[in-house]
Amino acid sequence: MNAGLHAIRGPLLNPSPTAGVDHFADGVLVGDDRGRIVAVGAWDEVSPRLNLDAAAVPRSEGLIVPPLLDAHIHIPQHPIRGRFADNIGVQPAGGRLLASLEQNVFPAEGRCEGPAHARHVVADFATDTLANGVIGGAAYMTVHPRATRIALEQLPEPWSVGLVLMNGRCPGYLRTDEPSLADDIAALAHDFGRRLIVTDRFAVSVDTPLRKQGVALARNHGLRMQTHLDEQRAEKSLIEDVLYPDAGSYTGVYARDGLLDCEPILAHCIHLRPEEVELIAATASSIAHCPVSNTMLGSGVMPLDVIRAAGIPHALCTDVGVSPTTSLLCEMAQFLKVHAGSSAAATPEEALRLVTVAPARMLGLGDRIGTFASGMEWSFIEVACEGPLPVTAREAILRGLLGTTEAVLEKWQRGDGAEAVAVRRLRDEGLDWGHDLAVLDADVRVTTVRLEGRVRRVTRAGRVLWTSPGTLR
Image (cartoon, rainbow, N blue to C red; front, side):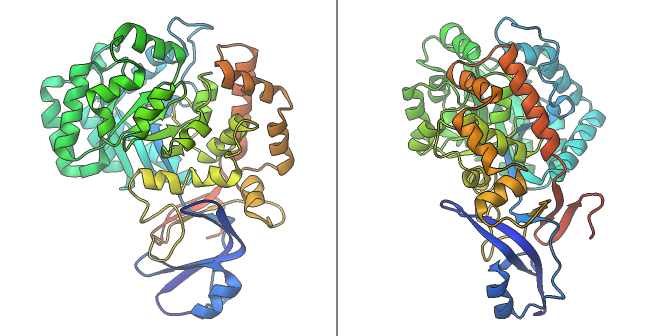
């Protein structure tokens, strides 16, 4: 093999920057000493061109896939992942989201004021996300500048982290220190640049003066913003009918206050009216689509075809802690389930693109990771693939990554089974706690068990970052 080259051989999936996924049953990914890709493709085509020696090129531990990115996740909620909605009652006033925040989330975030606790939470988060093949993304921390600094220091560069703004409908210990906010953001922006995201929690907990201050600071320091939008009907009604009746819509609040001008990542976007879609599409906004979270809270299903038709960038994200797992493979599986039979765009190939190419572009990393191409980082994950080698990209994604089959996917598309019936109700009207939501909750947890632990190794720019116990090398 040529001096200075490194390669790995095995079944390989390469999401296209435009559409589709290339599949090589016997593929090879070649990098150089700088940790950059030199070539990718079929072994029989690449190996003679680069004089690769089959005996010297290691075999992968499974499917070779670009590393995954999560553009919406909450670090302080990692310790309560999957227990977000514990002990809130059957039909809490204001909906499951607001009740869960008060009962479980705010106390978990408050504990991160202590530096030792914050360091521990961030360390566990870093290990768990990496074990699921996630090397970066956009995360929420808390209102505490010191905790946000700890997260930015401990997490590697592909992660961006948000200092959260809140000054209403939250405990006193989680209110933004408004007099020091400008200095806090200036210090963090000086040290971490655009890895810092100014984070408007959501319109329930942030008033217009604080939001406008956050927008001004984001503009002054060249930062982007992130927030939540149109997640649950009760939340939307509170914002539009009680808190901001003159804004026209939930999205109108953010448009009026300038947040949509700061390249925001907008989480959820389920209950959008047409005029809200137009507001988002007219800006450099993008959407974090969280099927697992939206299922487990009974929030509903993002209107995928509407978002695609409007040309709004979007990616699949976990929204941990509602989700019980940081696995984006689980998110891919739920994406296929909730959109089955309602959107022809919900394909296995598109699901993979929405955890690789799409978030890389959203996060400004698209020239380095997200797909395999010459000059990009020699970064990849290896995902266990049992049984015979898949023949097509579709089969490799379904069986190799998601541990399921074409027959199961067709069952979802036909609408057969209790889960499909519950999904239709979720999509049409949202769900309060009851039989249907219990069915979907149990199904997600079974999927989590099946898909966690499938990543065997994570390599970034030629350096192995994580190896599963029992992996050969």
